[in-house]
Image (tube, rainbow, N blue to C red; front, side, top):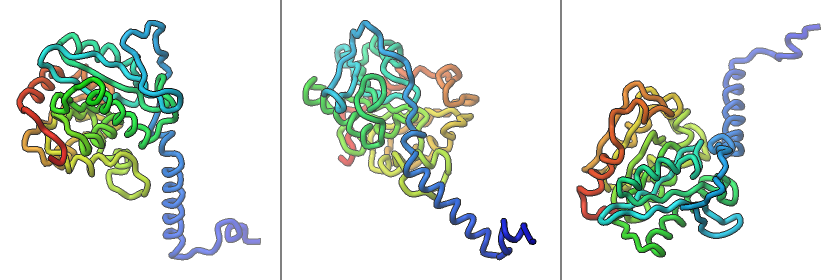
Length: 275
């Protein structure tokens, strides 16, 4: 009995093509159904018992946890979208360091992170940043031209999306990706991609600052460089950080982020997306 033929079948030049086709289908289905669980990795950092500075927009599954520290006189407010392995508690020291220098800062937790309700999804992140922006403008009376949009890593997704929709002062992207899939595949080969930053940033002509580690193994430096090149802004700056990866950017970088942001925001009176 020819067990080899029974188990493997008869050889055909079509077989490699069939194998590639079915591998592609399986990977595409896996991406469509499992992408959110791969992209979002909420940390287990608990919120403190002392909730000074913490508050919430909405209730239940729609609740968005925020920290809002108001600015000093004539200072802008940074709307900060944090990285994947962070929540408001782990980010709070960084926010406070900017607040000490006079900046207003506001950050929010994505759905399913910290004490924000719901589950993390691309659309959920968009709703969260939009709700935070509207709170700043409609309830706190912060002028759009005084709002700096800052997104780090996965936070570049909601940041670029909002920059394409709402008026703002400027945009700061730290270790951003072209899109969630293209951070891995480099080229758009699968459907159902998340956070197409390259598509949104093409429409944003406000001042732009991009900072990216040249040795980043999570989101390759080429992603940040390409976004910088795609931006139509006439006032933009790219800061490559030699020897820095994804998680040691600020340790190895020879720059002062607060000074760069201040320089970026004060150079212009008012900038907006789409005019």
